[in-house]
Image (cartoon, rainbow, N blue to C red; front, side, top):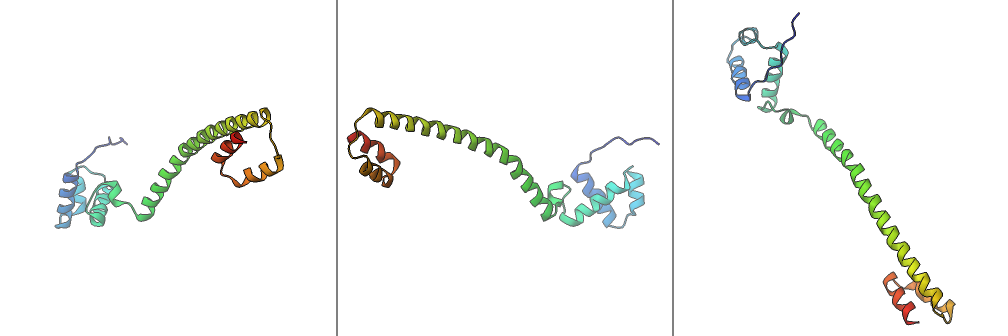
Length: 136
């Protein structure tokens, strides 16, 4: 048994053959005359009846389209995860630098009334904490 070589057909050619079949020419005659695989011809007829198109994307079910969309989103998640990890490293290093600078300021200057200052600092947003410490 010889293996058939894979051939490709234009959408126009496929449509002409399907139209022949729809106008009454027997399937077996079309398959034999054009040396087609019966399953390929049946698929063309089914696709043409379903959507009028032979493109695979036009003949997908809504479930298949949803699955493809989910797979694309799943492929994108590792990239987003890597970006977030890098951002976390940057934020952590910046935060560490700020804490280090703040501790240097705190321990190098004399702080009066530490309990009152710590209570006041807890209620301030972070950008005001440095100004408050520098002014004390």
